[in-house]
Length: 162
Ligand SMILES: [Zn+2]
Image (cartoon, rainbow, N blue to C red):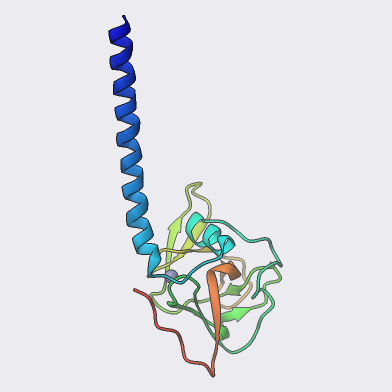
């Protein structure tokens, strides 16, 4: 009986050890990938990499209308132009178009909303809504300020981190 208990304990320990090693390897791989990108605050990381959402009217850009380009906060990929930004009064930066090829759309797990992510790094940006008739293009990219960085038209764009 004692022997059996010992074997069970040994097997369980081995399982835990193996599982632990597996996780560490996954984390290492992810860390290596993340290491090359811009350093993020914990709030930016929560939004970009854990699909979080900032509070309405809390971000840096919901009420920001200068001329320039919005790039991905994580990898510097140019995502949106200021001339596609409009005031939707929703509390988040809103754009009715993206820079071609920069933004990926996928249906949320709940099947109701369409998530938008950065094509280059996969960072979560927000959601896209169609059919609200707010602009001629009838499209609203509802983007978290934490996911983007504004670059004024008279500054050069940072290099995209691939
Ligand atoms: Zn990106």
